[in-house]
Image (cartoon, rainbow, N blue to C red; front, side, top):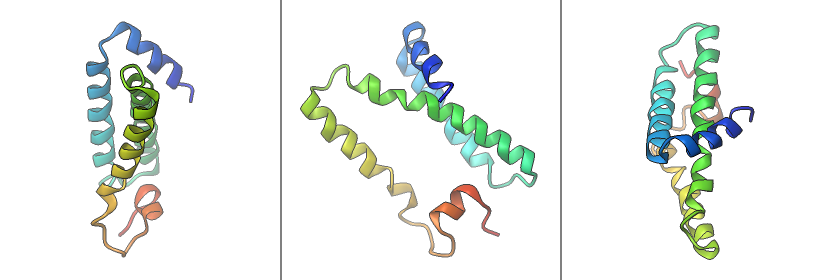
Length: 106
């Protein structure tokens, strides 16, 4: 939450397409690096970096409200939330989503 305000202010100084693309690339890269880490410190550092990327991407909803009408905005954000579950749709039942996110499945 501490980074969300500077992230929103960053949209005033840099073009949003660069801010969002860099945040999404960083978020995906750090999320992909977490499974091979073995130390607690490295895992926590990567979780902080993922949080930084997430703070920048949460401003996408604010940015989307600039050109959608209020009645269209609810539909668009609803579609986005519905699409968020797709990456987890093909997971095996061996590990729960909570366990995949915060723990290791060895």
